[in-house]
Every structure is written in structure tokens, then in C-alpha cells.
Length: 635
Ligand SMILES: Cc1cc2nc3c(=O)[nH]c(=O)nc-3n(C[C@H](O)[C@H](O)[C@H](O)COP(=O)(O)OP(=O)(O)OC[C@H]3O[C@@H](n4cnc5c(N)ncnc54)[C@H](O)[C@@H]3O)c2cc1C
Ligand SMILES: *[C@@H]1O[C@H](CO)[C@@H](O)[C@H](O)[C@H]1NC(C)=O
Ligand SMILES: *[C@@H]1O[C@H](CO)[C@@H](O)[C@H](O)[C@H]1NC(C)=O
Ligand SMILES: *[C@@H]1O[C@H](CO)[C@@H](O)[C@H](O)[C@H]1NC(C)=O
Ligand SMILES: *[C@@H]1O[C@H](CO)[C@@H](O)[C@H](O)[C@H]1NC(C)=O
Ligand SMILES: *[C@@H]1O[C@H](CO)[C@@H](O)[C@H](O)[C@H]1NC(C)=O
Ligand SMILES: *[C@@H]1O[C@H](CO)[C@@H](O)[C@H](O)[C@H]1NC(C)=O
Ligand SMILES: *[C@@H]1O[C@H](CO)[C@@H](O)[C@H](O)[C@H]1NC(C)=O
Ligand SMILES: *[C@@H]1O[C@H](CO)[C@@H](O)[C@H](O)[C@H]1NC(C)=O
Image (spheres, rainbow, N blue to C red):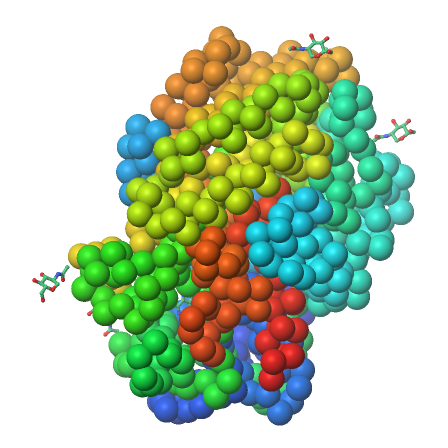
């Protein structure tokens, strides 16, 4: 990563300005953990695997009742570096606390091998992510309910989105300068603070003039109330009280652990196996977790009286299930893992937001713009000094807070009839043709995909579902994540070394309609940047893919031929333990319990049956808030 050289100095200043809370948290971080010896053989009401986003939310809520004991097992450590605290670092990847889990060769991307980024740190993805906060649309969550999950539609989730969040407004001066709007009713008084930063780069005003005149695109006062496509101001996970990154740790762990002797968290401990109670055949009951210490390789067992809760994320949760004997028998058999429960869906249904790195150059950008920090050392020094003394300016933010969400009709130049014909073609596809091989031998997986496809095909014809989210900073960087992929991947253990990281098969662009939608996205970008409102930005040149590429094939050939142009993952892995009925290839039910296994739940991004039309963290936080209520209610 950039910016390593002066970290130490900045770190010292930050320790002064960021207050003592993080420092205190660091020194007392793992109460009761010690070397791990004191853990061996201990029993808690709940054992949670993964002290990341969902794990810390659930741990916080379950320990509100001081009689309930919870142990959180986290393989990473507490991170008090500036990268984990200063908002601007959301621009960079903090590779020290990220694992890159490798993929298999990706057939439609020239067999390129890539990876998915997964956090390994207390707070999980929220410590390393770009901080963008956007909920999906009503249609996104209503589709979950339609897939057999009563209570998981927008109406069921909205209270949890509100419960978890507090909105910190920008300054009145910024509100009037940039015309920033939001809907206060979208938020509550929850632990996670969200903010639209007061600092904006001046050219964003030009973008807003263009956004207000996009044919067919709504410009509502605010996002996050279930509305989908449109142009919005959206917040970032930044705590306005401290102007620092708001994470699952800072929101749900640091403020409570000192008052809760019933909340235990150990770091540097990897869960390697789910332990089951020996019972008569067909009756599988989780009783605990085997953990291995990263410090000394010591193995220990910990036990859960009530439930084992998996919150290790979409990559590691299905892997842990598989190495523990829960997953498709064929996959486990190939790795010589004894099958305890043949569950077809574990590791199937992989969805992510493959992203086209579309880029334009603008010949007449204002000063400053998002690139200035990297190019002008004087400006860089000035804005860091401003942040360190006043906590204002560009270092107090990172990701774009202007978002353009577009439906399929929007991408197709507002042609509802073209969208409808694409929808019909989708439904006419032989469903198994573009799916991973395992879908052919498992009728439930195929049925689940068909159910998803029917919903997507219906929503594709409307302006209710977002197919792409362009996050705009006020420059020519215009990445396009494909929010509603039809291709499905798999995530299976490595048969020759089951305990090594799993192998992801992204299967990007396997379904040709995904490619069509990417080409439509590129064409929409061309129409957008041709808007007359952009004239002050000077000459606009399309750098990626390049305006000489016109047909779908030409556009896709360029994008798929260069690993920098089309990323198979935007670090949004989802769906690998989908919440759907068994007959649809699901892994957990609407109560989040693993089908056919007792005392075992999943609460992380892997339960998402259909990936939402927006970045993931807002959804993961809300799922975890609801999960805690469900688990608490069954006592
Ligand atoms: C680089 C990056 C950028 C992103 N940008 C954005 C963004 O701007 N906006 C947005 O909305 N979303 C973003 N996301 C996605 C979002 O942060 C994640 O979807 C979300 O945090 C996932 O939450 P989770 O609880 O499912 O998993 P995580 O938060 O990843 O938590 C899983 C935890 O389990 C631990 N763990 C895993 N295996 C084991 C094991 N065997 N034993 C013990 N512990 C284990 C991990 O170390 C981790 O702490 C980004 C993600 C990344 C990685
Ligand atoms: C900007 O300043 C920060 C803090 O001093 C420093 O870490 C970083 O390297 C600088 N970046 C550039 C591009 O000069
Ligand atoms: C804000 O809105 C006013 C009135 O609609 C408009 O004149 C002005 O250009 C807008 N400013 C920006 C930065 O969008
Ligand atoms: C733990 O075991 C692994 C694999 O056997 C080995 O590579 C590593 O060095 C060990 N670590 C420690 C701290 O003993
Ligand atoms: C670099 O930044 C400084 C401080 O903001 C500014 O005065 C100067 O004009 C900038 N230089 C260029 C070439 O933009
Ligand atoms: C901090 O804010 C004050 C008051 O607005 C201003 O005078 C000062 O220059 C700022 N400091 C820095 C380093 O920008
Ligand atoms: C988009 O639609 C408008 C209005 O129907 C039409 O004038 C324009 O030519 C179309 N643009 C393209 C590139 O198809
Ligand atoms: C699985 O077990 C069989 C028989 O015990 C053995 O021959 C084979 O090599 C094992 N395969 C793997 C991948 O370990
Ligand atoms: C360049 O942008 C400035 C405003 O930042 C504007 O005054 C000027 O007219 C623009 N130049 C061109 C050639 O468009």
C-alpha cells in the first residue's frame, strides 16, 4: 500500500487526537484469553466463529442480557493502525489484515486466476472496506421473502436497518453549498454512525447538474428507505463525533466490552472444526468448536450450551462447514472428509459484484480533485495537517457519497420493451446450460436458481431494481459493478489439502446475459458523459474500454482480455450458505439454523440468497441485527 513511510508519525498524532478509547481497547482487548490455556474445555451459552461484522453485532446484542455468556473466536487481531481509523485510508487496501483467497482459472476471462479479498481482523470487513453505505431496494429484500423466507422482506428488515444506525449530518454550510439532502427517517439511534462528509471536490457540482437531467432517472431527497434506482447522496460509515471510521468493532465492541464480563473475545485463534455431540444417526447436534492458536499451534476445544453461531463470512463459513463434514457428499468425498450431513447448497450459489473499471479522462478538472492528493505533495501535506488539527477536509472521507443507481431499462436508454425482451430471453434459456456442473446433478440447486431467475426476470423489466451503482467522486473514474449477476460460482475445499484456503470458481460472465448487461452499462456511461452539463470539464475521452469498441463483442473482448479492466470480485462474496428451503438448495432456513443440524446457525453474508443491488455492509449489519433477535427469542 501507499503511504507506509510516515505511518508511524501519523500514528502518534492520531493516538492524541483519536482519544484513548482505541488504546484502552487494545490493551485490554481479549479478556480471559491469556495464552488460550484458560479457554480449553470451557463452556459458554453461545460460541460465535468470527469477530467480524456480523459476529460482533450478534455478540453485542446477545450479551445485553448479562446472564448470557458469549465467546467470540477471531483469527485476526485488534488493529489500531491509522489505516483502521482514518477515513481517507478507505482509498487503499490495508493488505496487512486482508487475506487474498485464490480463485480457480476463470474460463470467460482467459482462464485468469484472481482472488477474493477477505478481512482477518477484529471488526472484519468493516475495518478494511471502502465505507460506502447503501441499502438494497425494496425489491431486493422482497425477493428473499419470496424465496421462502417469511419476515425477510423490506418490511421485516427496515426496522433493523434503522435500529443499527445513527446519521451524523454534514455542516449547514456544506449542506447549502452542495445541496446535500437525506431522509432522517431512514436512520435511528443505533451504534453505527453514518456521515455524509462536509468536504466535497468542486467538480461534483457539475456531476450533480448532469445527474438532475438524466432522462428517466429519479433524484429523490434521500436513499436507504427501500428506493432503488436513482441519483442520491449516500453516507459512509464514518463517525461524525470523532471523524474516524465507524466499524463493527468501534460501534458494537469497544463501547460495551468493559461493562460486560459475559462478553469474551479471543484473537489469533482459528476455528478449524465444528464439534458434534455423538447421537443416533441422522440427528446431528453442534456442541462446540475446535480452535488452533496462531501463536503456538495449540489445539483447544470450546463448547456452546445453546448454539454455535457461524459468522466467519461468505468464504470461510462454508469452508468450515465443509471441513466439518457438512456439504455436498461428492465434494467432501473427493477430499476424504467423512460426510456428517449431505447438504447440496454449501458452497454453491456464489455471487459477487464483478466490476468493470470504466474510466474517462477530463481535460479541465478543477483544483483540487480526487487525484490531487497523490500528485501534489504540498496539497497532500496541507490536507493531512488540516485533518490532524481540525478533523476536516478530504482526509475525513474516502468513498464517493454521490451514487447513481441504474435499472436495466435505464441502461437500455429507457427502453422498457428492450428490457422486456431481454427478460423473456432469460426465461427461455435452458437453466442448467450456464451453471456450474454440480447444478446438473442436484435438482434442488437447479430449482433454487430457477426461482431466483423468475424473480430477477420479472424485476429486470422495471425501474425497481438496481443493476449498477456508479459511485461518483467528481472525476473520470467510473467503475460499474454488475449488481445482479446471473452467473453463479462455487466455493469448495481444496481436495488435496482440505484445511488450506478453499478454491473459488467465480464463473464470471458464464451467463451471456451478464455480458450483454455489462456492454449496456458501458454504452450508458457514454451517453452519461456526453451530457451537455459536462462541458466545463473540457474534453472527455473514454480510456477504458475505449470509444472505438462499439459492438457487445468488441467491448467484452477488451474488458475480458485485461485483468485490470474487469474484476471478478468487488470483495462482496455472498450466498454460499443461502437462506432458502432445502428444496431450493438452501443451507439455512428463515430462522438461520442450518437445515438438518441442531444448535448451529449462520448469521453472515453467506446467508444472502440473492445479492442485493448495492454494496454489502448495510445489508450484513441489518441481517445480523435481526439474527440476534431470532436467536435471543429461542433462548
Ligand atoms: C476490501 C473490501 C472493501 C469493501 N468495501 C465495501 C464498501 O465500501 N461498502 C460496503 O458496503 N461493503 C464493502 N465491503 C464488503 C463488506 O465489508 C462485507 O460484506 C462485510 O463486512 C462482511 O461481513 P461478514 O460478517 O459476512 O464477514 P467479515 O466481516 O469478513 O467477518 C468474518 C470474520 O471471521 C473471521 N474468520 C474467518 N474464518 C475464521 C476462522 N476459521 N476462525 C476464526 N475467525 C475466522 C475473519 O477474520 C473475520 O474477522 C468490502 C469488503 C472488503 C474486504
Ligand atoms: C501524503 O501525506 C501522508 C501523511 O504525511 C503521507 O503518508 C503520504 O505518503 C503522502 N502522500 C503523497 C502522495 O505524498
Ligand atoms: C443547488 O441548487 C440551486 C438551486 O436549485 C442551484 O442553483 C445550484 O446550482 C445548486 N448547487 C449545486 C452545487 O448543485
Ligand atoms: C504451526 O504449524 C504450521 C504447519 O505445520 C507451521 O508451518 C508453523 O510454523 C507452526 N507455527 C508455530 C508458531 O509453531
Ligand atoms: C499544489 O497544492 C498547493 C497547496 O494547496 C497549491 O497552492 C498549488 O497551486 C498546487 N500546485 C499545483 C500544480 O496544482
Ligand atoms: C483549523 O481551523 C481553523 C479555524 O477554521 C483555521 O484557522 C486553521 O487554519 C485550521 N488548521 C489547519 C491546519 O488547517
Ligand atoms: C436514446 O433515446 C433517445 C430518446 O428516445 C433518443 O433520442 C436517442 O437517440 C437514444 N440514444 C441512443 C444512443 O440510442
Ligand atoms: C483418500 O483415502 C484413500 C483411501 O484411504 C486414499 O487412497 C486417498 O489417497 C485419499 N485421498 C486424499 C485426497 O487424501
Ligand atoms: C475550465 O473550468 C473552469 C472552472 O473550473 C471554467 O471557468 C473554464 O471555463 C473551463 N474551461 C473550459 C475550456 O471549459
